[in-house]
Image 1 (cartoon, one colour):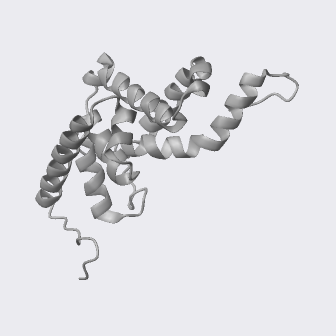
Image 2 (cartoon, helix red, strand yellow):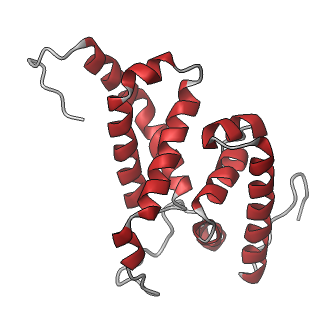
Image 3 (cartoon, rainbow, N blue to C red):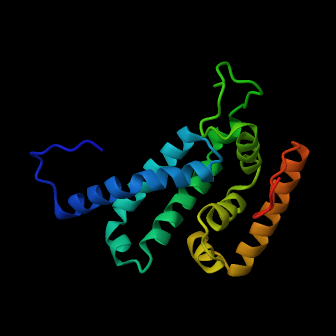
Length: 182
């Protein structure tokens, strides 16, 4: 966000700027997880979410759980993006012309298999899995972020994990159980 030192911005602008400076990296990381590694879409989602947040800044400041409020805005931006007509018409290619030799996270084939498996999950299911297991939110906090019931979070998470296990098994990727040794 570019700032003109002589602009004499309002207090609201100053507060919003401070928020963006402190939270944008975390929002971008969350959006990247929600989009299963699509960095460009993640940047678009963060920008859309910040735009909506700026408009609703007074409501955000009154929120009991500001982090939950921001997560909800981000998930809504993802759902809005997935509903766009032009997005449905987009043709995906099996092979990209210039694929990097190492995945962006450096996690290798296992990391790419996880990202691909996450990509195949519906947006709300992916969000439930990301919030529960990547951000270690409890069921209640995840339900609050997704504006749904705790039972819905539990079922979406269970189904999402089942789909991830099946996709990773099919890709012949195995992970050790927590605490296990090779």
